[in-house]
Image (cartoon, rainbow, N blue to C red; front, side):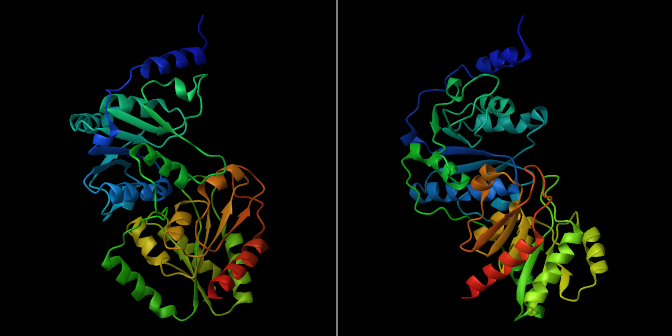
Length: 358
């Protein structure tokens, strides 16, 4: 009698046992990238679109994004079309997937390094001529290289950052990346609004603090926030601390910050999208944040940053900030931000500001 694991392995092999149509990748003109996960993942992937388009400007680049991360591609000149995927609802996605199937894509690029059945199901429906993916970890006893649906796996070098791992997916196209910097395109209106808001605090040192990430447990508690703010001000009284907010947490954050009653701490203006937040971050002198998309937004503009990360060094290596000046403070736990050293955050923040000013 089959165990549950063996049964899953059987169906996984069955789902992936068909090779796609033979096709010379040199003739590819219509390419679809699957990136329907988080905001940070999309930011880290933006160099892929740019470097491909720089080498082959005639290629049509489409992205299957999520409702959450699609905004990151607003105004991006290297992406021709964005489609929305709901990830956990294959039936709801079916009309979009069938539409993509009718586009008859030459190549589909997938970035998952794990074997994910719903991603494989989507690839079967879209049916591109060639499928490229990062080398996959095994699952249910099935090794990544057993998945015959995929035509090419690219390397995942040890100790590499995800931006470089995902740029490796361009190797089959013969593309050697010239830059791995992130792309974010802010509108003139967003830029002007952020500048107008920040003018009232010039020439103070502007520090943005983001309190939470998308994953439960990644949060700076208000008691710790107060200690951080007071410690920074004690070290440098020429600062203005701006608490970064999202549309969903603006009211509750503003209410709690008012109880702290520190005249050098304010909440940011109410934002409508993640690019509104990016426009503000672009002009800050320092960002303090848990491990979340704000890390990569700050990195896109090379803003000095101090991150708070759970004690998972492998995860940190893959998603580390890429700003020239950055420091990381680790918590005591591998799955949540608890037990980290507040004094270390203050000390690292002061040092990063000093290096940047020097």
